[in-house]
Image (cartoon, rainbow, N blue to C red; front, side, top):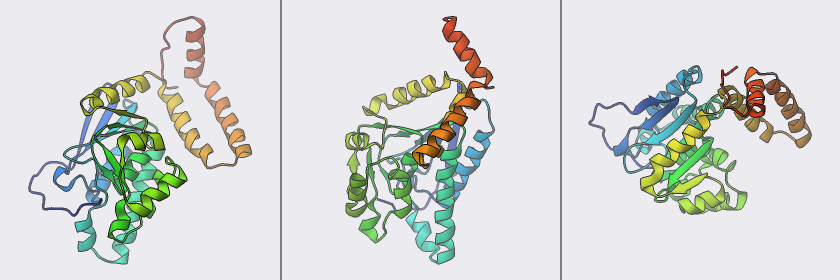
Length: 268
């Protein structure tokens, strides 16, 4: 469940970034606070995502975390120190903007979940395009235990998890283990903890081998068509396919397939 913050004594950055072979790894770095989403941490994430959106060298983003938890939700100490409607309104608007920034990022975002993800932390996992977890990870929306219904987390999570399981999570606050979370649709894959890095690296490498333009077009289309009636979704998807077919990378991909060679992507 969300954790109250303890004082930070280290002067380390609260968000780390490492770029290797087209993959930008953003690591939440408030381990003593179980990576609770303070307003400062959310602002750092928003800044990095905005920079990455315009960076053609980045093809995949991995969202990871340091310490004993992936993310424990909102920072309850910060919440109690800033009691009042204006702060709460700004806090939840900022959190929603962060989740939508992940959704709207041109690049594919993978959550690498090594441990507990609760409330807004579980929301963060659900907001990512893909999620791989260690078999030791757990997932929960436990706000009900402290008098708060996880209303904003349920927006992202309910778009991954079925209604009955989602409602069970919301009204009981009980955590799901990683295997159950995978079966419920929150995760793509569960691996032993010692294999998590390798599994995420392999998935990221597979994605970086594709046309970045195609992935950008496809990601946007995927989320937009989900919210449309079927007739509108087909009309929209047909227009997207037409635009995609006219791209240089699509023609290169078809030619490479016919000629039995590896395609050379230009992102055009």
